[in-house]
Length: 426
Image (cartoon, rainbow, N blue to C red):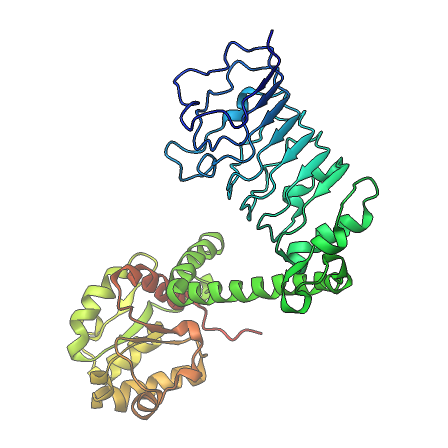
């Protein structure tokens, strides 16, 4: 019964490429040596059936492509058949990558040798199953960072570590945990610690031992890191909030108004106050804007909302001046449809605006509502209508939206403005 098979320096390059495993019938094999054969590729089922294998030697071959993610068909996970493996030697194979599942399930592995390769960035979980590891050889690679996410499990029971002659990055993020572990470990032998474990970067530590790294310089970073995270999060939240309000503020306000008004009701005007008036708003507009009023304002009328229009609701048998004054008194609000044309209307400027101003002074700042169809400067508004935006509450100043999807929000805000009480708040 064959237990030891030594094939070092004895195989041709394509000797391990048959469809079936060449070792499938050697179930009692415990030691297999395939080193120094310049093997460039092996199949995933090469070790199928060799369930008792303890030692596998593959050093000094050409297996760089074997574990590459870019390999045709993906990485070759040939070790999944040998869960009882105790020694794995893969030095000098040109390896620059180890797949996440390459060493999965090797919980009995005692010795792992990956020296003289090109390993640099190691995935967090590649060594997670190596709970029994005692000897670890990673010397002469390109490792710059030793993070606990990668090495904490394999280094928990180590008796020997060879990791020298790597270009270590001596910064808090890269080397702090490793230096702390080296200072605290008593059970692990680390030969050449002063001479072979040297810093490559930054310039302040170049060519110095990693044991010269000042770990105290990293302890003060904790509050600054927390402050950085807090300040960064605050700035990002402010930026997101500003952008959200800038582009979707009207939408938020629209749904907020719906929520509030479904809970508290649309109008805050008392029942007694509503009975004093026949109309909710007296509408003042230029003759040119009559069609807009017909299309946008009149359709809002219902049992709870009525508008007073000169052409429709003038009192028969009464002069136009008396009819206007009487209808204004019957209306709880005065609604101006503000355009450049309205500001040039002498009838509006000399008579209607005058009575509206008295309404603001005598009643309250909520008794007048301005709807801007155009962007009108406050100076022109004051000169023509004797009103300024600052005289009214913000909820009583509305702008007709450019985008059609915002029209429902405009209607909602208008109904809220018309429902506000005119009584002075104590």
